[in-house]
Image 1 (cartoon, rainbow, N blue to C red):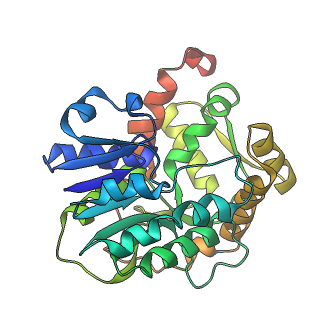
Image 2: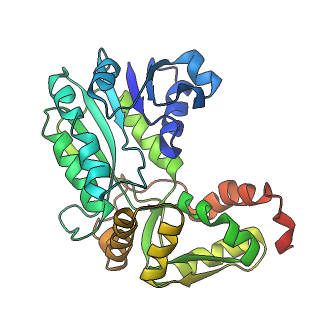
Length: 300
């Protein structure tokens, strides 16, 4: 039995799909089970509630071999530590009491070098807490996601531009969430590993935002450019979209740490290199997403 938390999230739902494809006995923890696809409700055991609730998590972990752990987004949290560390803390007793449990979690690159890196530092502190419980633990340490570009679909479709406070020529790894799900699912069904360690998922290549803009333009067939924005404007935009001041600052701190090379500290190895290229992702994910928009003809 494998338990998946946050099964309706971007990564979580893809982990669920991978496990269903290979017909693994599956349990999911969902705050709102009605949001689960019918196929998932029909084929998986569903535990209703938050995995931040120790009673809910204890029921979800009972009799399971492995858990996919993903802290759900909390954009209105009072602090980044509250969103990550405080959410996870109730799980520690549950994990400590579990017998021979394996846990695969979502984390970030930069362990040992992250300083004042917002979400990254909170993720690493969360990893350390889980690793201290005695479970076998793999933290998937990740760069920024290609899929984050979908959040700027409107600007790309209507204005031919996307934004970040990171320098245009900063070359960094970037990965597709579907590759993260593949790595997570493979670890969840593999009973051979033990101990506590990180597993980097670096995508297929390192690119700058200028490189990405060129690829997006070639794929979509219209000019798309990258524009660097001031950190204050970036933070203000996040707050205008409903994020608390503390969480917006955490996002900015993370971006600035990446701009200083945080994501480049991890050496690229064959194991850490995953197959989806940014060009492939643009062709198979971004372009169809934009084609389905009612304003898709604006750039034609």
